[in-house]
Image (spheres, one colour):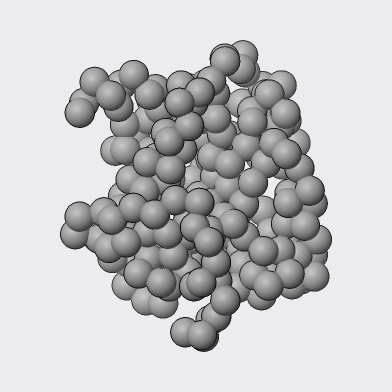
Amino acid sequence: MSVDSPVRTRTAVHEQTVEGFGTVRIVPLDPAADAELVHGWVSEERARYWGMVGHTVDQVQEIYAYVDSLSTHHAFLALRDGVPVALFQTYDPAADPVGECYEVQPGDFGVHLLIGASGGEAERGFTGGLLQAFIGFVLTDPSVQRIVAEPDTRNERALARLVRAGFELGPEIDKPEKRARLAFLQRAALEGRG
């Protein structure tokens, strides 16, 4: 993505400086403008749990155009110091197939995170820095009482990272596209830490 890209000037829904990491800006994903970038991330083998390996750019654009049409699901790009580094999705579990797999509670808020192309060696603390900004963004809404994630059970790295961020692992569930493990992060637990 070029330095002159309009994504850098897109209005942020959240901006947070994470100490030792940088400034994270979360901007709405533009399905047409961002399809090629996102396709580059979701089509890599390391992103197999995202479920889009083998998709074309047009298919990725169609998927995110559909997400963009929903009032209950949202997609964002995360920029670290102006460079797009991750795809972040939020959803209302009661309006998502995951809501058929567990008892949704008032204040539940679902999230998905895909780290963009690393370009080489993984940077220590990178995902943790992003998660700190994402959690900060989600908790700006006082109605959110519990963050819900549901990574593929085979994605041990994602599960371990969620646990390090304070999520508690819940039961395994069967979704049409995967066997997933629920993970929950209570607002009260975060506020108790601070």
